Amino acid sequence: MEKTIKSIALNFGIYLGVILSSATVIAYATNLELLTQPWLGITLFIAIIVLGIISIIKSKSALGGYISFKDAFTSYFITVLVGILINAVISVIIFNFIDPEAAITLKELVIEKSIDLMRSFNTPEDAIAEALTQMENSPSQFAIGSMIQSLLIQLVIYSVIGLIVSLIMKKTNEDL
Image (cartoon, rainbow, N blue to C red; front, top):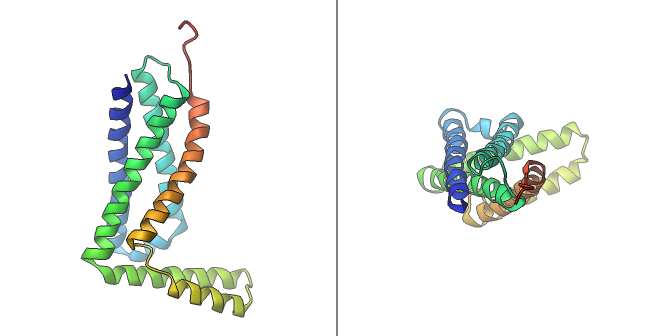
């Protein structure tokens, strides 16, 4: 039964990876500025959670309608891990090997959006200048170290959500 959960989660992780990677590739190919849009980030965030939940539902169904908290979380976690890893690999390939200039352009777009946002909140100019210096001196978000750090942060956030979802979705067989 454990193999069933892992294979279901792996399949949904691959689906998730394809969805996330497709969004990255399409944005790269059409308009890099799309990658700075909050609506895209929110949409992908929701997609990750939804596919994690679907993975739990399918695993629960494969287990005869019952699933332990551990199995539910395992299904969710594997799905999310595989999906974001696939997207990270695709992003590293695109922005480090295929087109490193796109990473620089994207960094500049993020800096511009950040400065505009700070100005809309009436942030003092000296604070904006300090933030600008920090952003300019920071490594590319697509550098391997930055990607690993980002993946770990994402995993923590999605794991907290996964723990809550798993707690809600678990259903134990009282007859056993």
